[in-house]
Image (cartoon, rainbow, N blue to C red):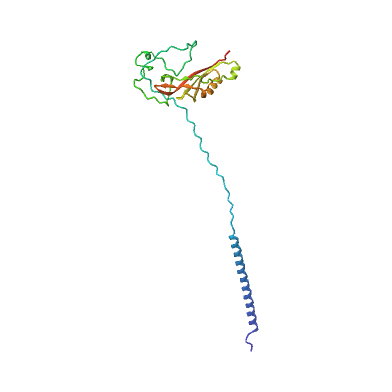
Length: 233
């Protein structure tokens, strides 16, 4: 008798062939995975490049300094108690002078001859503190502002000179303790032509004055001054 059936040998032969094919397929798949991993590792080991974009940030501009406000007119302390001294005029005008609103109204009680010369009847007897940063009116100072000798004068506007136009400008401004005009305080009270007032304003920075005094201190004073423009014939 036969030890093995013919059909049984066929089945074992098929199983052996399938096992070999499966082994080869798995071995090839393992090799493929190893090769792919090594290639990826080599690519990762290379230098990496990153693109960086620099954005310029605009710096904020520093705020502009604010212009200082014009000086305030502060009332000065009253002058000492006393009387006014009359002086003879140097030049006698032949026309009525303009009204100066900065001057004190004349009071007969200021001419009694009692007290301190240069004072007023409504003044105070004790000495008061004088501050140089205050702005005084003419009637509040002992020595008012005077224009310095050889000080520049406003230039006659050419267009008005050629047209034969004459006139004047009445302006007000503050003269500080150094004898210079504070242009920021310039105001036009009256002018026969705007160019006359402009000529005065342009000349003020170059003009020089003798500052006002209270006691032995120089102080700021509000000045009201007319400027005449006449053609010399």
